[in-house]
Amino acid sequence: MSMIAVFRAIMSMDARDVFPVDMVEQMLKFTPSPEERALLDEHADEIDHLARADRFLFELSKITHYEQRLRTLHYKKKFSIWYMELKPKIISVLEASKEVQRSKRLRKMLEIILAFGNYMNRYHPDWFVCILTLFTFSSLIGANEEMLWDSSCPA
Image (tube, rainbow, N blue to C red; front, side, top):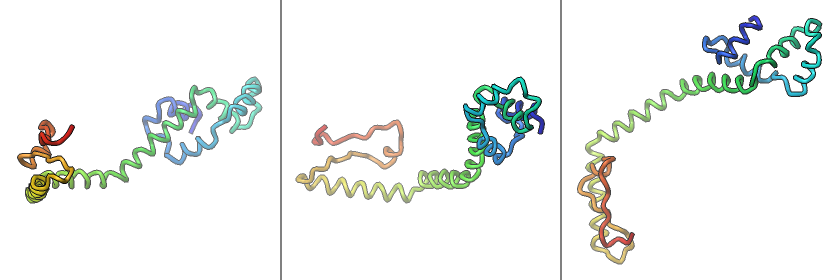
């Protein structure tokens, strides 16, 4: 790959997927330090006499925010890999939550549990538990409805 192709790929954040993730990781490992950049700048007039790797590093050091660009590019490439690994789990969680939301038996069971708890609280005033007044379980699910507290419950 030519230096111009590498330069364009870095500047465009690898829009055409020229670099594999391994290559970006290797480029990050060999990012010139500030001391190395200073040494390369000292020998800028002798660029033709430098080794090929040194010339490559010299040209890359001219890219503004080179290391930040590479780190961002690395994250971008790793993110797509992480997403593809997590996608089946995300889909499973979304489908499970939809099933829970649609389940009439679960809704009925939670209504009974809530009614039983309210019944126990109503007839045992020495317990320091506020009574949650709910007409149906659907008001728990509804985002626009408010839960009403019993007036005997301190604020």
